[in-house]
Image 1: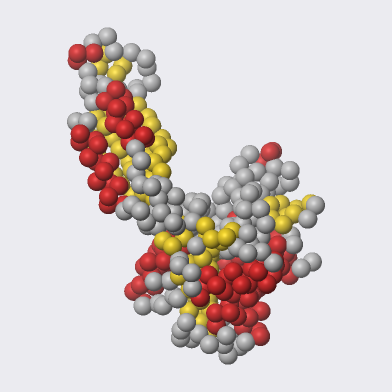
Image 2 (image 1 turned 45 degrees about the horizontal axis):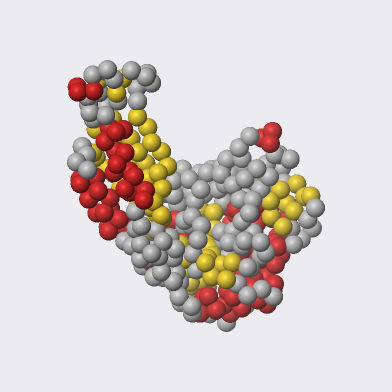
Length: 375
């Protein structure tokens, strides 16, 4: 059995549903310590964070990943148990196989390979892992980034191991991500009997015109790096549970995914202007989970594309789609960030899987990236 497949299987056997690391980081730490890495635990609350480094000074190249996974869902719908890794037809089936324990294994072993071959390499190479990427992402890389700011920890380049490929390993890399802005809105009315409309203020009726305007609005046209900003309602609730009572309050959750053509501040101001214009009695709470970021063509993107080309023969396409990643916490530290990983078609799904042949190829890609940047 290939070494990277063996380590992936060991990681996937651990039911590390967020934020429980279930011993994954200890397994990785043992490998890295044996290879000569300095390993530090940066635990916050219930979240495990691992920081492992080799070398000193700059430049600093960090590989970033997570050991937590989403819940498996209905167990009876899986073809094999989600935490009993199973090989079938060239695929490894397990929760977390693609997102992202296979790539954690590949990054770990690539770093071990590199320092074994170049023990006195220039600069610093590091691995940062968290068990809070799939959850609230509060005590994971967000908190570690705050600690790095206090320490003055330098990061020049960051390779995130999120599954980025569309159909074949290396066909797509993420060179940026959209920002994510959540709005939690409460519209207040006056509760009462449905038979006496003159005595009530129905918050459902009141929000309807404003909501229609928000949903129909074109927020921006996007730009060369990002698609147009999208506005989506994710939850709406009102009512007392009975048909003859007008509710006194409506709660609505919505989200913006936005690029650099808009700002969080501008989106917040525009929404509240609509609410005021429609004369709503409202309260709103905003939550910015991450600002947009993008990495321009340069040393990092060049190294990533060249390593992919050498291993797969594919010319990678840069993309900024998908959701958010922990790269949003590293980019503000001044780092260039690129995401490189396996095919993402099965992530978070029943019967999640990764192509077995892609695991050693990921290992070679990551080693190629390090060698191009640090040697």
